[in-house]
Image 1 (cartoon, rainbow, N blue to C red):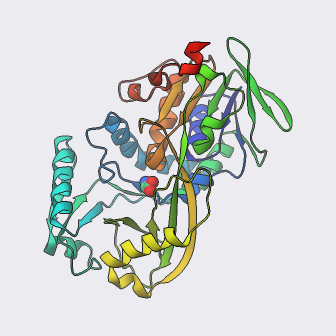
Image 2: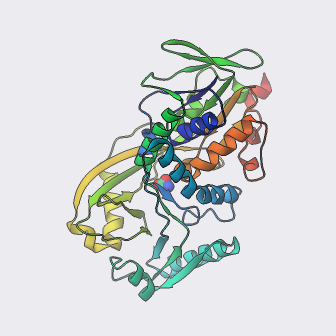
Image 3: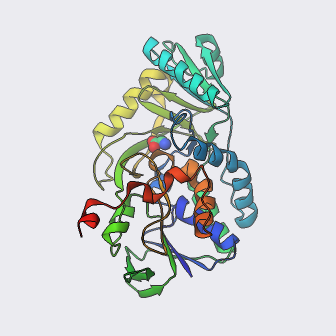
Length: 372
Ligand code: GLY
């Protein structure tokens, strides 16, 4: 039996993939499946607008982006829910010469990786996105990027997991890992002991808090708060995802325009604050004055799970049977498909070059473990 801790996009994706490969899988979710960061996200599939070209996990990000169309289609066939993938390009708009030259460099870096990217002069960027304000200078267009409706993706995964026989136990609160000196034995939940030869920690921002993990297998994960809001568009004001200085704008098919997101060190506080919402509205309205008259229909906040070196943890730890898939920070939605495959491969003893930089063993043993 494999126990996956966490029923977000990462945990459910892994559970689905493992069940597909024939494993008996049980997901333990402390709260509600598909919620927390998976629900709070904007669903952007944006490795290049996020500036990840040239980083150690660019190849892994690019792979996950390429997997998306088949992934969403497979989940729709398996569970009947369409996560509404759109690969129609993302624009990053510049309002100053400094921003323009930084974006031109981003376009060049992406092109060097063989990615379709273009610099759009003012006239072209306004033709692409007419709502951009009178002061826009130009923008970078990354044609292969896009968005998925992450809330629908959570439902699509839960439904596909159920169709594959994955048992999802939700609302059980936090659990503790049980291990002897050599290996994992299972987890202790408030309902009792659940035996497992393999436990996968996919608990997002809470991944570093799991009780019962021996010090040498413990990984630092910290929450990075993001506040967001949604405006109701009367017509399709924005055609595709657009980044402006200080905010990104994500138009959804249901008429909402998501505006995100703050980046805050606020521990596990998920309150929506006046200052957070003001900073997003200031940025959005400065760039797109036409948003001024739209109704503000939703606000929310979530916690990105970050690691000290900015890379996710993916694979085996120093404790036999204990695997981690966490620390995806700003890229959890993007990385869900590749993470599921790579984690399932790791359980079969396979790690390829794109996933190698993400090994949880890269940090070495923490000082407390070395001292003991
Ligand atoms: N990926 C966007 C964010 O984390 O705000």
